Image 1 (tube, rainbow, N blue to C red):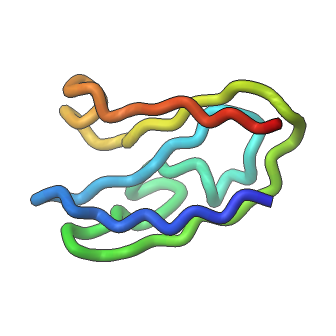
Image 2 (spheres, rainbow, N blue to C red):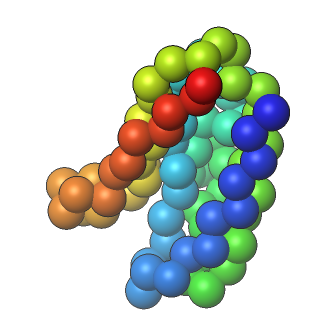
Length: 76
């Protein structure tokens, strides 16, 4: 089980898109699968990671991804 609290310290809305086989409501597409995380707000993502491996995550709000806001997620 992965549980991550995201605190948005950016000046605009954001979200987190987790790459891997996840529930649709943890997909992080603002306006489609979740409400955007407003500036200064928190959002808790919780889902079961399907299997160990190397995944990655990033925002689904332009131009945040273009500016390098992404990271690896390694599940052992």
